Image (tube, rainbow, N blue to C red; front, side, top):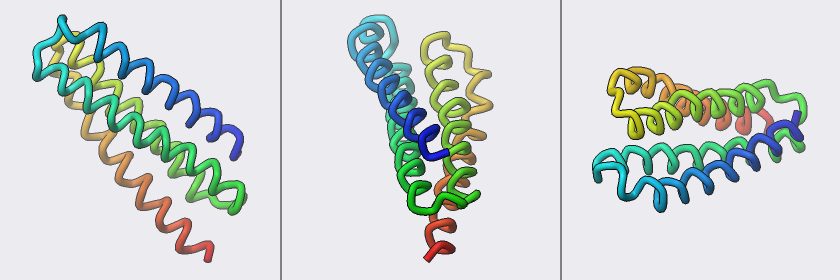
Length: 124
């Protein structure tokens, strides 16, 4: 499982850089300042949690049987999809209703970090 999360983390960081560049260069003249800020928030949280998935993969190399670290990494991936991608879609399309799923991604992120802390504490 560590390899899966190392690959997912690296691929997500790749996409963060690509999406960030697209936002900075491709969307700069197409979106309002407010929507560009929304897009940027999506990229920012995408990066934080892509890095978190990468760290989870590294932690699983030390704690290979930790179901809490595994769950945390999957919750970060779910959070990226629900939070960051909803912000990408919202900023590009202007469909505000999509923003209703964003908080579920935030809850996924919070739960993931709490589980990660618990897993590390538990596996002294």
